[in-house]
Image (cartoon, rainbow, N blue to C red; front, top):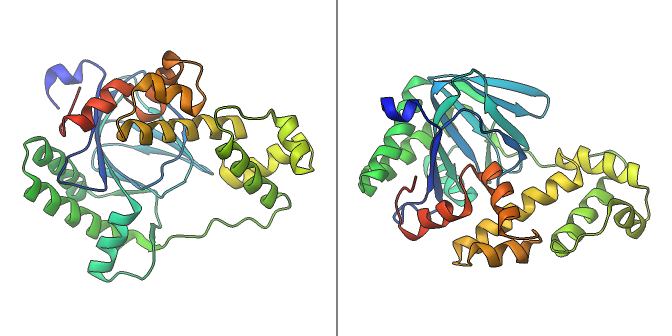
Length: 282
């Protein structure tokens, strides 16, 4: 990270056309905080400066240079600066399909793999992750893909097992799952918690408790995250941000911008340009 970059907050979130199934984020955050959210795919992040504080179910990590953070799909988490100067990192967001493909190639295990640790101290892999970014930004897809698969294979070989099934034996788990389906189907005009509980034949408090247990966040937080995820898919398909905002249930584009930037780390416009251009966009 250059001297100028170290003095300001910046982020680049993009895709390389020749690296399917992968999102890239390289950033330096100081004031920005990520609210509780989850990803469809995996997170493999190399902290290159400062300290990142990651809130995971049951624990909080402090990741510094040389560490690699590993987060499985659908695991709720937060992130913020752990020191006044913030943190810098290079992050890979591989899809489930890409991880499964690499796992099959190296023969680690059958089925969908999952990381068994949240963070490792591995300066070598941390450097390789930053080299994936550099190669992709230079347009060297061959080097980027080679380095990417090497880093993923190393993490899977050393720190992975079968992806754990998301099960809950607590009463109300089925209500939580049914509530999620309702919220997904009626994302643009969701019911209130009381209305949702009445429809499902339970009480608001019982539903709130069951939903938190099942998904790691209350329904309204989950809904905001789900709206942003759907908005991302719409933007990927070329939908203008103003139209995407209305489709997913935000009141207007500024409403989408605010939540999208908090969760994804860049505004919708920069996110969209990062895909259209096939290269990094500040």
